[in-house]
Length: 97
Image (cartoon, rainbow, N blue to C red):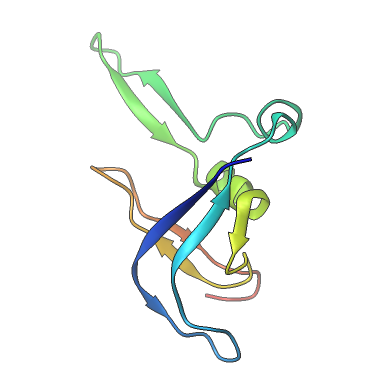
């Protein structure tokens, strides 16, 4: 499986962990895409004026990240800057704010 390295908007230095400024993701497997029941992280919805709006589902994005992050690990809070007008992806470990 291929992997993708995503450059983060800043460097993170959580206590007791090697500092990082990238996140490595593995490619989704068949089970991740088709058998998990998560659905698509984004989809187009009609806007009632003949066009569409791209909807992003943060909960689905988060579920995929929990499955696909290889390093530094999902337990660390990271912010992934997304292109264009899409919202940033904020990954927060349970119990963190």
